[in-house]
Image (cartoon, rainbow, N blue to C red; front, side):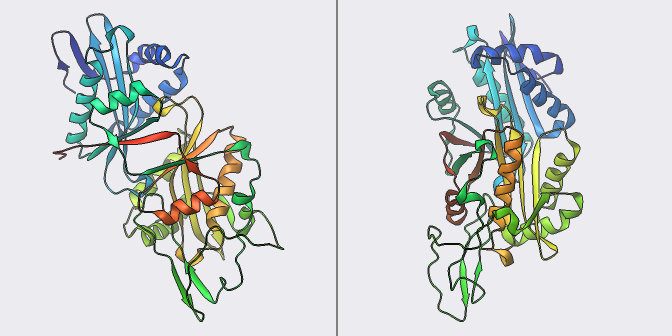
Length: 364
C-alpha cells in the first residue's frame, strides 16, 4: 500500500513489528495493557488480509497512532460489506494535531476501493472524547437497536431457561409462524387454523405443570460442517437471500480454533431447526470486559413458538458462563420488532453503548 504523507506525518499499513507501539498507546488510553488483544487483532489480519484494514501513523518522533478495522459481510442479517472500526489510538503528545483524521482518511480510501458501503462502530454513551471524534469524522447514530444481557456466570434465569408454555388455543389448532434472524427485514407473524386469529401476547404468563429447561426442548449442540446445508436452507427461508458463503466462513472460523466462537445448532425430529452463531469479543471498542456478540440467530418457521430460540440462548449462556464471559450483545434492525420483543422477553435490555454509522459515497 502506498504511503500517505505530509511534511510531518506518514500513514502506512500496520506491521507485525508495530505491536509494542500499539500496545503502549492503547495502555496509555485504557490505563492497562491489552497486549494479548492487540496481538490477536494483528494475527487475524495476517491470516485474512482481505478482511482487515489496519493503519499506522508515523511522525518525526516515531509511531504516532493506529487504527484497526475489520470487514463485515453478513453479520446481523445485513446485506453488503461494511467495515467495523475496532480500535483507534493516538500518542498523547500528538492529540489535536489531526493524526486521527489522517488515519480515518486512509481507512475511508481503503473502504471505497474494496466496495465497502459504510463504516460502523460503537462507543459508551458517556465517552465524550470518543463521541466528539466520531462526530468530527462524520459518524451518526445508527438506527439499529444495540441490546445486551449479563451472562451471570451462566446461572439459571427463568425467563430465558424455562421451556415456553403455550396457553390453550396456541397449539396445533393455531399454527404460529415466527421466524427471526438478527438484522433481517420485518418479521410477519401469521395465525392460521380452525379458530379465529388473534393478537399474540409475548408478555403473557401462565402456569406450566411440566416446567423444564428450554434447552431440553431441542437437542442443542455445537455446529459441525455437516450442518451447513440445513443452516443455509433455514437462513434462506428467513432472509430470502443465499448467504451460504457467509455462513460457511463463520463455521470455518469456529472449526479452526483461531478465534473464540460459539456456534450452535438445534435439532428436533431428526433435522436441524435452528442455529446461533456468536463470537467472543475481548477488547473491541475499548471494552474492558469480555463480551459475546451474537452474529446470527435463526429458527425454522415450521418450528416457531416451540422453544427453539430459547433453547439456543439457554445453551449459549451456559457455555459462556463456563468461559467466564461477562455479557452477551447483538444488533437488531430498527424495524425487526418481533426479534426485539423476543430478546427483551428473555432478559436483554438496551445497551449503555451507542451504535454509529458513517455512510461512504463513491464506494466502487
